[in-house]
Image (cartoon, rainbow, N blue to C red; front, side):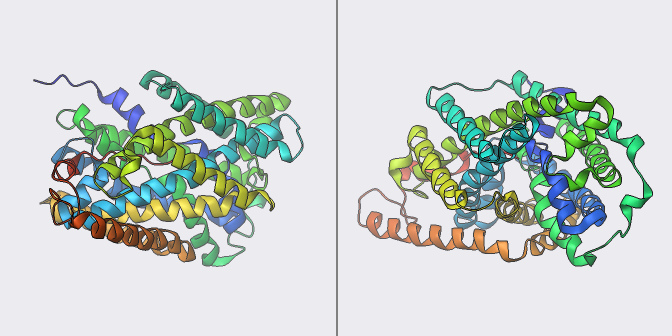
Length: 429
């Protein structure tokens, strides 16, 4: 009998770590820019959407335990094409999301220490370089360190809520919807970055027994709702949401100038931890996709996938370097990719689950489809990835079809047997 390694509390910490990330350093400001105080509606709406989505992925994990995650579920429900799409969307979202996360950490540190604007890019580049070096050297962040980083982020967020609560004034909530409901919809598009990640629980499903995964997911929902709505209300009500570094502004109400270096150092630590972890996951994801001929077979080694990640992030960084720093489009593009993954995953659950679980999955599919629509023009990103991936895949099939020992999918017999072993991770949030 396999020993269960995750109890309820440790499991809750790991599931919460899949959702909560350093993106929270900047999202209150970006959401407020889109919708004003009405961003609170977007926060609350996404909390509501998260309930059936989180429960659905927990039920999927209990029904089909293992490390394959959403790619495995999508493949089991719809076939290899769905498996491929999920893998491509995750793999392509990582360089965008990690660049955005590194820039967010750089912005916070630069602002905290009073360094000039270019320092943001320099810090982000140093964080990325350190994370790539750590991965190349085979260094990994352990589970206890990850829990420690999560605890640090929670301390910063809860501290900001407590410190800024006395400064909340009704005047800051007027007008409540300065940009109408359209602004709320735009806020949802960027805030999706803070709400994707429920699929991460499916990768841990084999580590739970009985209903522990469902319990851990429920506790995570409760913590997330309190923290997210607390930050949303106090950031808007204290005027801190107008600052590009809202948590620093919120904390300064209670601890004064000390808030700047505290949040600056916290931002650097959290950003490095998240980027390092997701680069490690992406390198393995790329290798797994390559083994199944869903990416060039030369990438079947994690080190080579890591080089692809480095090249992609460099290109994205060069493209954005010549213009004013704007995290909003990077976060929205990442959110669009991950929202499509969630939509396909919940749709797969409709086919795979029965009874109450299927009813929950139907509700989750309907709600994720609605939030997906609010991603707007950024849906062109996952669409382009799907088209490009399909075209590359078709080229592989032509070249491999004539080789002996290949399947009708154009993969080797050995690769075809590995279909259920794809491991996917969300990019740094």
